[in-house]
Length: 180
Image (cartoon, rainbow, N blue to C red; front, top):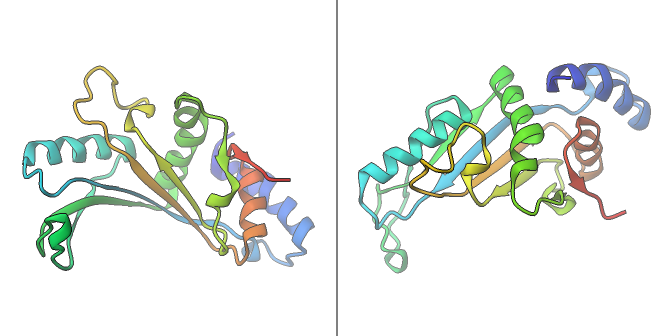
């Protein structure tokens, strides 16, 4: 079952029953997914940055936006205006497609995967996932990947508390290790 269908047919009724929501619109939902990566700005090789951008666009099926340093930091050899990372914000159908691939295909392919820790859900019900290697996604061929980089995935919700977000992600089928 697709993520959006599962949310509408299973999650909304279960959340309304557990938390006593009066309307379907009051039930917490996923607003956006932000996929983010940073790279070493001292490596001024633009070809490496282009390859990372190409991999990221194939993972998210959307072109990443480059992020520049806001201020100089001598300790990290960063100058103001240097490109230090890439970010993609997914919404609506692309967001649901990405989450479906992440939960059902990519995460189970990662090495020694035993579930995502519950502590990654913050006090507002948002879920942050760190991935060490982008090659867990089926769109990236492990043999042809020249640069291995990590991703940070932030799943932003309308939940008000940790418990609401936790219950929503549990009902959606996220592989979370609960501390019960």
